[in-house]
Amino acid sequence: MADVLNDLLRQTSRSFYLTLRVLPARVRPQIGLAYLLARTADTIADTEIVPLAHRLDALQKLRERMLGQNSAPLNFGELARQQGLAAEKSLLEKVEDSLALLPTLSPADLKLIREVLTTITSGQALDLRRFAPLASARQRDEDKSRLGLQPIVALETAAELDDYTYRVAGCVGEFWTKICRAHLFLHARLNEKQFIADGIRFGKGLQLVNLLRDLPADLKKGRCYLPREKLEPAHLLPETLLSPANERKFLPLFHEHLDQAEAHLRAGWNYTNTLPFGQFRVRLGCAWPILIGLRTIEKLRAAGVIELQQRVKVSRGEVRGILLRTLLACPVPFRWRKLYASAAKAVASGGELA
Image (cartoon, rainbow, N blue to C red; front, side):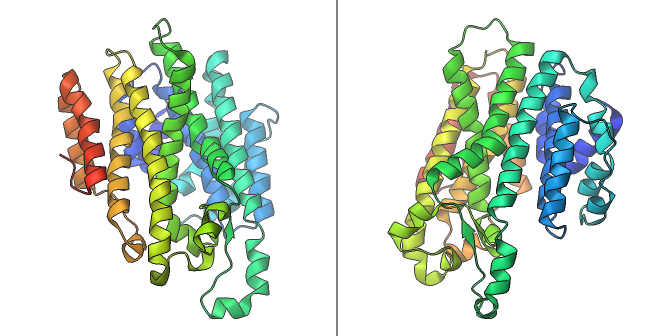
C-alpha cells in the first residue's frame, strides 16, 4: 500500500486503521483500498451543501472509473472545498491515487472490490434519491419549520431497512469473507453458505448500531431509518419521535431494533469463531468492532430520549480496554469465549463490561 494511502487511512478512521494494521499483510492492501474508495463515495454523498444532482453525478463518475468504464481523470475540487475535515478533503483530492492502485490487484481481487463498491455506491445513491424530497418539503412547510416540526422522510418497511444495511455494510462482510478465504484459508473445511451469511449479518449489525446511535442526528437532517410500518402501530411520527412525551411508546420500538442489532452481532461472533484458530489476526480484527458494538448497544439500551440526543459513544478508554482484553484472551480459548459472554451479559443487565 502506497505511503500516501496509508496516511489517508490513518487520517480517515483511527478505529478502522487499527483493525487494518492487525490484519495479515496478504489482505491488508485489498481491504484498505476498498475502504478508502468506499469512504470517498460516502464523503461525496454526505456533502449536503452541494446540490443532489451534482453528488449523484460525482458518484456515477466514480463508479465508472472503479469499474474501468471511463478513463477520464476525476476532479472533485468543488466537493473537496466544501469539506470541514482535512481527511475528507484529502480523500477527494487524492482520489486518483486510490484509483491508480486498482490495476495493481489480481483479476480475482479486482472483481471482488468492484462488486462490493458497486453495491455500496448503489446504496448511497438510493439513499440520496430516497431523501430527495426533503428540500422541497421544507420549503412547502415553512410554518411547521417555525414551530420546530421539520418535515422528515422515513423508510416505509423493515425490508427497506434490511436492504439498506446490506448495501452499505452487509456486502462488506461478504467481501471481507471472500478476500480472507481466498488468501488466508482457502482449503479450510467450512460451511461456506453459513459462513458468508454470518459475515453479511456481521456487517448489517454494525451498520444498524450506527443508525440507532445516530438516530437523533439523522432526524435533525430530516431522515428517519426506523420504518413507518413499525412507527404507525405504536402511534409515533418521525417528527416527534424523540419527544419526552412519547418516550414510553418510543423506547420499546427502539429496543426492538437494538435486539435485532445484537442478534446480528451474535452471528458476527459465530462468524469470528468459525475462522480457523490460527487466524488470530483476523479474529482480533473481527472481535474489536463486535465488542465495541455491544458496548454501544449497552449504552443505548440504558439511555432515555434526552440522553440519546447527547450522542452516545464508547470512550477511547473503553476501546483501549477492549483491545487489551482481546489481546490477552486470544491465545486462551476459554478466555476468548468469555469475552462475548461477558459483553452480552452486560448488555442484558445494563452493567459494565466484565
